[in-house]
Length: 121
Picture (cartoon, rainbow, N blue to C red):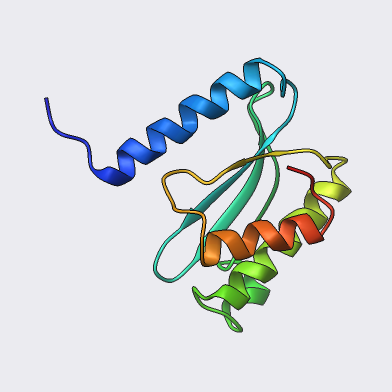
C-alpha cells in the first residue's frame, strides 16, 4: 500500500471531521470548498445532500483573470464574490472545507472575505 503524503493525510482528516459535522449538528448546511494552485484559487459552495454546486468563483473567471493571479488580493476578491453569489442563491450558513490546505495566507484571506461578505461559518 502506498504511503499518503502529508497533504493527503490532512485532507482526509479534515473531510472526515466535516462528514461527521454534516451528519450531526450541522446537517443541511452546504460546504464552502476551497482549492488553490500556484496561479489560481477556486471556491465553490456545494450542497452535498442534493449533489449540486450552488455558487462558485475563481481567479480563472474572465473578469478576474486579467487583474489578479494567485495572490492574497485575488483570494480576497474570490471570497467576496463567492459570498455574494451564495447570498443571491439564498445560502448564508456554510461549513468551511479547506481541504488539505493550511488555514493561512490565501485560504485565510478567502475565508475572511467570505465572512465579511455575509457568510457564516
